[in-house]
Amino acid sequence: MIVDLKNLALDELEDFIEGLGKKRYRARQIMKWIYHHRSTSFDEMTDLAKDLRAELVCNARISSLSPVTIETAKDGTRKYLFCLEDGNQVESVLIPDESRLTLCISTQVGCAMGCRFCLTGKEGFARNLTAGEILNQVLGVAENLDKKERISNVVIMGMGEPLANYENVTRAIGVMTSDLGLGFSRRRVTLSTVGLVPQMKRLFAERVKCRLAISLNASTETVRSYLMPISRRYPLRSLLETCRSLHLPPRERITFEYVLINGINDSEKDARRLLLVVRGIKCKINLIPFNECPGISFQRSKKKAVTIFQKILLEGGITTIIRESRGDDISAACGQLRGKITRL
Image 1 (tube, rainbow, N blue to C red):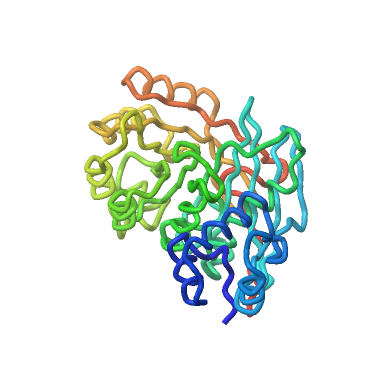
Image 2 (cartoon, rainbow, N blue to C red; image 1 turned 90 degrees about the vertical axis):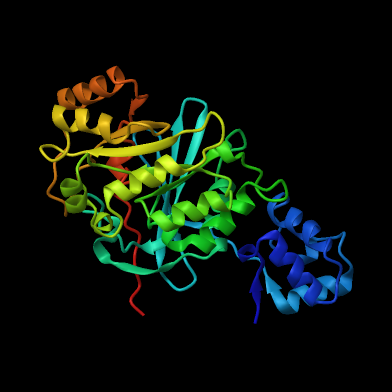
């Protein structure tokens, strides 16, 4: 079987090289060629012996992805469409913000979570992405940037639920944050989840190098279960107890994402309840006014309601930021990614 080396963590690559009868340290050289020099051919790896390069040609490959289309919004947000080898498609979004370029990447084709305010799951779920397909979104976008541009932050919250693809996602994060890989600081990589409690605990037990964001979106069990079916499996109380039990690194906080939907979860009572709900958790809250789109009947909260909601949280001592919609004119805003599922 031909192995895609971008699907392997360092220790797995070392085992693979050892299986070819070569020294394990060669794996570190190969990783540098792949991620530092962006090599896609073994012939370029000139500090490897010719016989090793020949064996790699027979037993391995280095995958890559190039965007099929790139759309640019009025605000400078860019949406990248990638076609995978099986014909399925995923989308990534690059968001410029002052001196930062934040890339939002996907982890699945479609999504099985069924959140009512998100388009991604409307077509259903096809499959998990491999670690290589996750990493290749970062590399594929980086290859298309101007020389002065550089991706500063990666947010794993595009199409799909990252923690439902735990092995591939954490393997990709390991490469992203490795000095031999893409070299991102853990503070520059954020994983966003709907709240898969067992996987959240595992993420911290294994000390995966990323920040955690949780899609909360309600202050009561009833409303959250209505908006997010996953809450029936992992109730709000269980999720919050888990958040309180996590051992966060110093100066680090959990980010709670709260999509504000007119008449559903945006009242002053909701804001005051939310203060009680997150009490005792080191956190900040991102308020995201719902991004309206065809196929979903919800409406964006009124500007006044958003402002009052933020004011109540701030007065309650919670750092609260309003995340303005970015790229909605090209369907690149939060909850609008669709891609394309190929029915095989």
